[in-house]
Length: 199
Image (cartoon, rainbow, N blue to C red; front, side, top):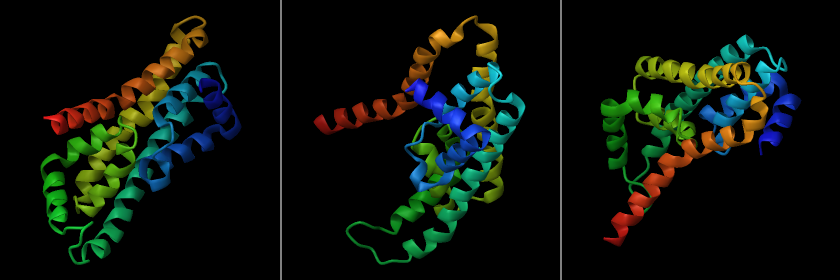
């Protein structure tokens, strides 16, 4: 898996990394992409002088913010058309009000925290647009999350690669740990839902 990421990054270079970050941040098709492990591995490769770290960190931050913004405007543009439909078995207009209320109360924290949860980070900006969260508020927390995630992960990989001798020996377990931490919220939620159903 790690070697696949390394090969992918080497083949795509900086723009390949930016494209994946953009897609995972705001496109429906991006939810399966390995953003966390990709950014960390790219940072590690930068520590081995295979990528320039400053353009990598800055570009990943910009791609993350732009990707989220694209998702937001996509949700804002398509949401009203979808939600004007009559109530049906699969759709209830009350859910729109719930979405709006949710993002009014928890939106900023949701946009920031979603950065660190695979799948959720893809759909959170779209739902923010659907729920008509104020763009100024969205952009503020989107930028903070994009900075911590988009620049923080490659910088972590970079400095770890510089500090620890022969860190490439530990790259596989480190990336696996990142993946495990990333999917742990979903696993916890799954078991919570299962326990509630069984009661």
